[in-house]
Image (cartoon, rainbow, N blue to C red):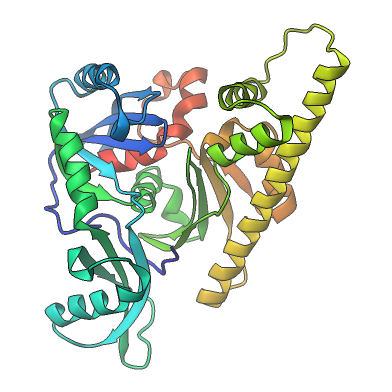
Length: 361
């Protein structure tokens, strides 16, 4: 999906709650939970945790672990905001002449017809006006839609776990909120966020109070890297993931490696090098597409969160090859007291960027 610009919240036709809720980020084989409290005009992260489970397909035992985690983090709070990265999600930039809202919604459905399978009447659609420039009397908007079946699936699973879903929104919207409350977007510059997920990596450009552009990077995610390692090193799934974990942790027992082990290490490094190169190519394509769409010549900074922060050398590789300032995004930097930000907390904080944004009403 590529989008022009949209304000956070209201992905689907749900009630906007201002009351406290938990941020619940479902990221493939990982589930992350964050609780945020408001203190005056600021937000403070008070609790967070990660579970290595796929909540949408969890076993009975995993569901019990999840319920216990929610109880510990939420302290009785059961209201949740969840990311809606469902395959049926559609987000597109459109423009229409001035017309009643009912007609705009119908026009959005009509324009979505060629991009979905099945009955368009089963899609919940909405839109956010863009404030940049009117196009020859036509008003540009960001239109979005999610199948009612997907909404029902999320609702059914969450309610079965004793939770009250109050918001579904895309990761890009939650990231915008997390960047905003941490003061990153106060300088008026164009900031890129690359959020590495287990099954999807999202590229987005933000400025001020808007996401200007976003798209998933094809073939760039942790699971795709694991599959490359499986194929190139002829390893089973779990062994490939373990090899990546060891590489990411920089672990070494200090013992001399056998010729076979050295060969596997070289193959692993070559595989990862190719993955990094493909990432840079997709990043450059995305930056070029954004610049063409908005008639600008550059973006100003790149921020990385999610799995990518554990990839040794990735931040330097991106900055060096793209020629753009690149850094890790810490969503706790302005939302958690400094004395609580231990080295361990700073290390894992980038994995909670989306969950922090979701937790803020």
